[in-house]
Length: 152
Image (cartoon, rainbow, N blue to C red; front, top):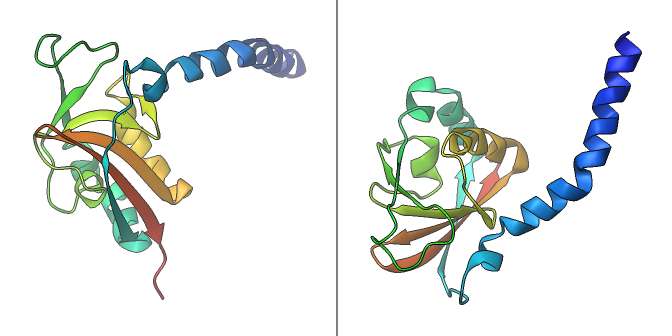
């Protein structure tokens, strides 16, 4: 029975792989834009221990609020964007460079379709060792690139 369940799961994943790949390509922010955006790149490094403590704090991890931007507030929007609030000093989000009232456009080049994925993303950054968030601050497009580094 266990073998059957595992093989059914694997078969389902294999069957869905081409579709998942095409759907993920459809969610690339550069594929959805009418014109390319030139963003100011703001690189940073964060100590791995400091970031790990921030991610492990439920209070800091759950402080983020993402409010959908309604169509009409910006130009044509073929994908969702979220205004960021509730960022506390020392939270994973502030360490990644986000500030209150920023507009979250994309993470790792992909549109954020579900705001519930952002705390999951913040945790994954620790394992991944890097982060890339595209935001708008005011009207300025910014690419926040972060490297998680271990200091002796």
